[in-house]
Amino acid sequence: MKKLIAALLACTLTAVLLAGCGSAPDADGSSADQEVNTEAETKGDDADTQADSGAQGSSGDLKTVKQGVLTMATNAYFPPYEYYEGSEIVGIDVEIAQAVAEKLGLELKIEDMEFGSIIIAVTQGRADMGLAGMTVSEERLESVNFTDSYATGVQVVIVTEDSEIAGIDDLEGKKIGTQLGTTGDQYSKEDFGEENVESYNKGADAVMALTQGKVDAVIIDNQPAIEFVKNADGLKILDTEYTVEDYAAAISKENDALTEAINGALAELKADGTVQSIIDRYIVTE
Ligand code: ARG
Image 1 (cartoon, rainbow, N blue to C red):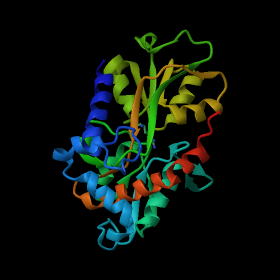
Image 2 (tube, protein in one colour):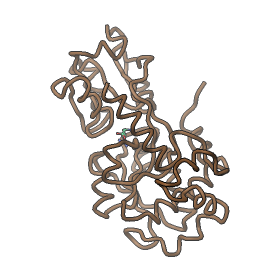
Image 3 (cartoon, rainbow, N blue to C red):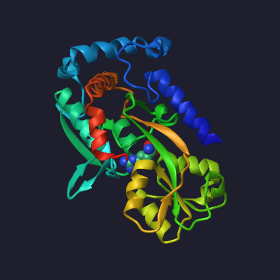
Image 4 (spheres, protein in one colour):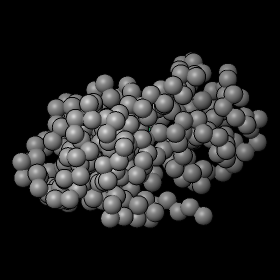
C-alpha cells in the first residue's frame, strides 16, 4: 500500500536527515549519526555541542519573523497537543514550544490557523515554526525542514460501536472522514479513493459526522481520537494501526540556524526529562 511505503520513506528520510525516527536523543553520537554524516554533515556533533554548551549560546543572533519572538503556527483543535481551554491555547505542543522558546531566550507567540495553512505560513515567512502534532512526511520535506522528532503519532480508525468494520481492509468502499490536509486525509485518499473520503476542517467535525451516520469511519491520530471518542457516545477505536508517524516542528528551509537551535533546545529538554514530563501530564496511560 502506498501509505505504508510513504510512511516508511518518511521514516527513512527522517532517519537520514535527523538521525531520529522515533529514537531517543542521540547525545552520545551513536552509530546512527555516523551513517548520516554525508547527508547531514556533522549534525550529530553540532547537536552535542549545543546540548552541552546550552542552546542559548546562539540565540542572540537567531533570525525570527519578529525579533525576539518565536512565532508558532498551529491548528488548535487537536487535543491533547493543542486545544482551547477557554480562550487560551494549551497542550503538549504549546508547553514544549514554551520550554524551547525559554531556552532560546525568545517570547512564544501562537498563531491559530487551518491545518493546511501552517506549512504555507512557515514557507512564506509569517511563522517561525509549524508545531501541530505534525507528521514528518516525504511530501512536506519538499517544502520545509523538520526538527528532530519529539513524539510518535499513530493513525487509527474510529467507528461506531456496532460497526461491521473491524480492520483496515473493511474500509474498502466505505465513506471515510478525515481532517483536511492531514496525513490521515492524504493516505486514505490514496488507498481508498478521493470519492470515498470526506475531509473536514476539524477532526472533531469528522467525528461528529460519524456519530450522525454521514461517514462510516474516521481516520485520525490516536491521541485526539481517544479524546474525541471519550466525548462522544457509541464510538470505538479499532485495535489496528493504519500508520505510525513521527511528530516534529516544521521550519523554513531558509532558516537552518533556527532548526539547529531548536534541535539543541529539544535535545536538552529530552535529556533532562522535560519533554517526557510534559507528555505524561497530558497522556495518562494505564
Ligand atoms: N499528524 C497529522 C498530520 O501531520 C495530523 C496533525 C493535525 N494537527 C492539528 N493540529 N490539527 O497530518
